[in-house]
Image 1: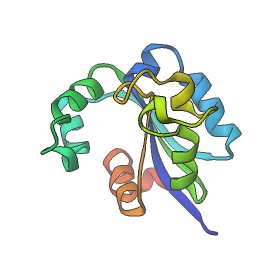
Image 2: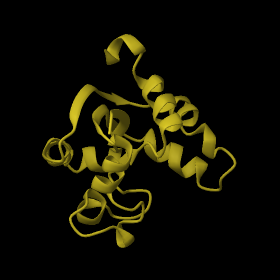
Image 3: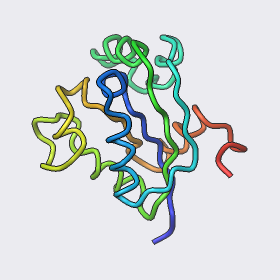
Length: 139
């Protein structure tokens, strides 16, 4: 299987609770290489652009308010089968449904405050990586 890249975000709830180091540790322990990283605070407009695919969904306003409410850490991760591997490492979106030992099960509070984001498919990963990292940042 070839190496693949995916986007990961440590969300405002996790950054605010001081979980960045623990999540980064789990990323490394899972065998990912961090290709690029940045700490930032998304504006409301940036959050709306990033989550534009969900614009018609009832949770869009709450999601973009939340994602622009505090600092995030954005990472480009690389590994074999990185997209599925990161989703397995995170666990199910709803922490109550996540498998034991996953990031969301151990640290998530609810569906919104679930500590992490990850791309769900190769085309999504390509869009999300380019949203945060110009191609020259991902050599």
